[in-house]
Length: 386
Image 1 (cartoon, rainbow, N blue to C red):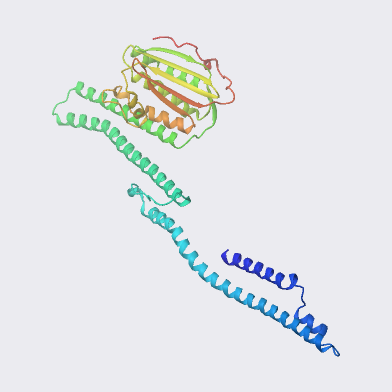
Image 2: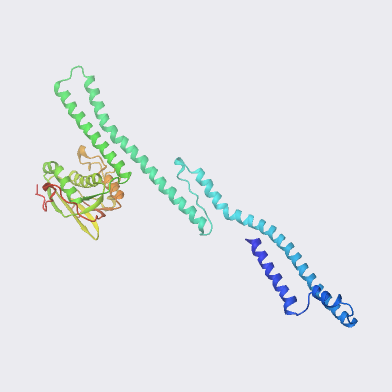
């Protein structure tokens, strides 16, 4: 580009010089003078002398143009070599941040995600690229840390029921004489531990499926999902003496029906298990502003607002006594958040003033309601109090 620009500039300068020497000063060229006067026989000596002066002037003009062209060619060559050297140095300085970024990319690995490029200098495209790369590495570091913590917590949770079974078996086998009642009690403990492990594995599989994205895209009504979840949890809610009220209005969404049913069921189970005897649960569904909304509220102990976000992390509990017994796996709300993210929705939780929690899930609404296939699909407007 530098050479081409300089060549164009010199060509323009040469054209302007030619214009000034021949067109603005009306004089013949050397060839025109020679052909018209000097080479013709019988010409007047004075006229010939005058025209010889004109020929000399024309020759000087031609020499000037020739010298100008030669000098311009030499200047262009020197400019090209100097420009090449300057461009090489400038390009090297401009590309130095890219070399730094390349070296950092090769250096950073799974075990060295704490390192950053931390490029300094003016706020230009390369600085923006380096900052973007640092932000990406920071997200990867947070993701890997969360994954390691999740694997450690899952291993611990799975080890607990296995340890219960192993300890019970070792104690009984160590005794010389074991009664029928002792073996029966051990069998109950084994069944309880096995059920806990099954629920944990089921939660882990649901979390993995929701993290992998939505597989099916079908119309599904969250009101029907809520009615089904309440029906499945009816015995547990009745055993705890909970009062259940509902306002189930159509809330159509498009997504994976299995995951959506699991989402609502986890909300209902969480409300039942993290409650106190004789408490209450309220489940609402509906639509607003092109969105489907499901809200589950429950009574319970007071929760600090700053601690609410931790409930959506796997195996994170507010404190040890908030475990909801052996049926809690610590994955309920984590699965809810993963399913909501997979369906491009939002989930928000807030503590109730009198204690307990209110969880609201908002998902993009569908276009039309699904046609009911059986009379049992009808949604009750009020769930009976227990």
